Structures are given as C-alpha cells and as structure tokens.
Image (cartoon, rainbow, N blue to C red):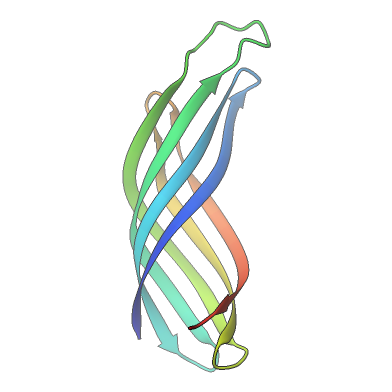
Length: 122
C-alpha cells in the first residue's frame, strides 16, 4: 500500500552558545510505502521545507548577533511501525530524519525525531 503524508513539526531549539538559540520548524510532504506484514511496517521518503530563526541575546554581554532566519528544502527519510488495535484505532512508533536544517546565517545541521502515538481512522 502507498500513502501520502503531510505534517507540521516543531523541531525544537538549536543552542549554539549562551548567547544565541535557533528554533526550527518544518512542513513536510512524504510518500509512504506500507508493507502488509502481521503489523504494518512503513518506510518514508519525502521533502521537508524547514525554517530556522536565530535569536540573539545580550544577557551574557556577548557581541549582539542580531536576529535572522533561514529556510531550506531538504530530504526527509524515516521508518516506523503501525499496529492496528481494531478497525479504527491504531498505535504507531517512528523515526524521521530531517537531513538539511538551517542556513549559513543560522547554522546548518540535521534533526532526528522519534515519535510514539495513537491514531483514529475515520
């Protein structure tokens, strides 16, 4: 089975020092391949558009860096498992890697997101 997934994820904060931090957010669109095993396993590949904001603080007396932001589109990969509790309710666990986050102005990196959840099918 193949499915499409869209998501918004708050990726948290990247702390570069006591003087600056970068909150990051991502919008993603992924294609899912679901293997029909006893439990349903899924593999994910897609693209994520990430936005990172650098917020400088002068609380430490450091040189002010100013506030800036950067957006980037990069690869999103992941894997997970889905267990059907009944026809409507399912539990899932997964891992997603946002491969390219940030810019030259805010710092570059990647993020790994681990999740566990319960869902309901309409």
